[in-house]
Image 1: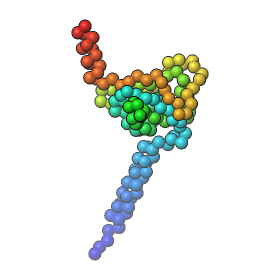
Image 2: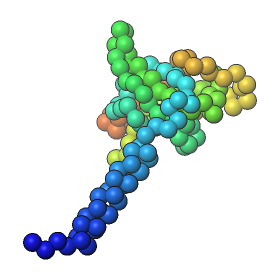
Image 3: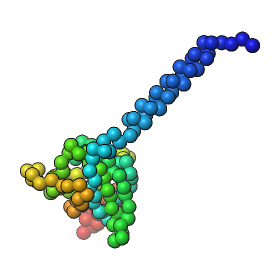
Length: 149
């Protein structure tokens, strides 16, 4: 039986390239800043499809990641999220569920109410000013209701 060393070398090279792509994929998709973050939470009536791993953004810039979504004892959807420790969130903010376009991913959008506020939220704080998710159906039915009056 004739051995072809070129095929063996190419097979090994292909295997090494596949392993390097796997490690790069794991590095890109891991939350490297999880140890450099603090937790905040907010309670919603409807979260509209927010899942663990969705982004948390302020002024369109990613500042964290959703870490847990659960139903509390009062039947509110409690969303816990990590914010990078380099970001200070002012005490006076509102939070809402937004989406990237019509078919895009959902994310939490934090909007400062008073940008001059020098008091910041601490770890494990709860954001009180919450705007609940409105689906497209909710918005259309509200427009129809207003048009019929």
